[in-house]
Length: 456
Image (cartoon, rainbow, N blue to C red):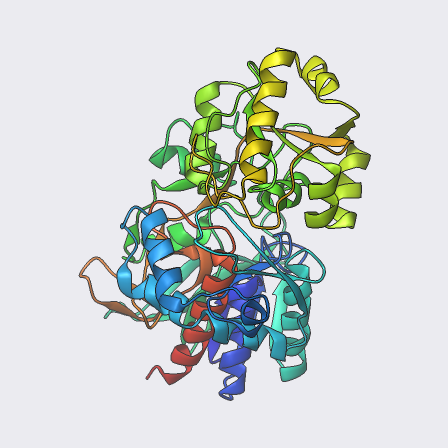
């Protein structure tokens, strides 16, 4: 086999397609029984700066603005050449996804971005692209083996990666096998949000009391396998919690699709006193930290007009059905349901509505962006969800350069080893902006797939 790829998410499948287009023989191994990893579960938002969809909506954007947003959110800890690579190739990534048959039908906003640039798949989940990638890869002749777990990477006396040892059909009952990869190995195995012991090595606060939005396989063994042959990991202690998850449903759930659509339209309040406490359009870390600081779940509220205008009907109905999203006929009913002082809560909503009616771009209290098409929250029913953060994304991972080569402890590329997506670190710095992960995976997955074939 020419190329071995670990993982069947956005990055791994992108790498496989590009490597196969370059006539390489490609094998992907996936430890889970289903393909897609976290990618098939995500919200289906791809950040692209300066797209035709944005232009049609009158949104002025550029790769430079996206780069600046990424660096600002990342506390300027992002590796600049990696962040710039993602921003500069973001529209290209979008068009590539479309070329596979993926359909994008709306442009969303995520906290921390200067403008709306999250292009959402018609399916409202990453499955809308992953399935197309999987079908393309299979059509091209890529071999995909599921329930196959990487055990270790194999190197020669000079440290070049030659291949891998793996278990098949699964870790518990499988037998050990070996594969030679004449060109190289691409690690696209995702992060370690579900690896409680591993994540606690970098942030001891993240015990199993914090659940995760990730699929069960996001435990980080491939990162450790690479570290064992001398790969350098970077920024592993930057672990992101999603501020839009609800304690009233499991995993990623439906509520994130409600929350991220109504920020800048509705308001988030402290469930203890009924008052706003942080800007709703802040980035993920800012909002998650603010909610955790409360010590109890927060609430997010939007009326019928804003909700029906912004939230996908299927996602809304799913949340209503599982009870994570509730409706009330009056603001007083909302206050009573959550034990808030009614007068304080009603006054807070009126204050927000006043800023909307004045067509302010930012509210003067907390600096939240208010979108031009926002309406005052005055039309019942009022939609309400509780919020409590879950571990969502690990910004740290293997150090790579702009060619997706993994860097060793000698600060030089490890011959024959590449990484892309959440397995790689340094792209996002301290905080990953929502919808940039999908772009990151496609951009660096394609780069890795092209470059591994060129390896001598």
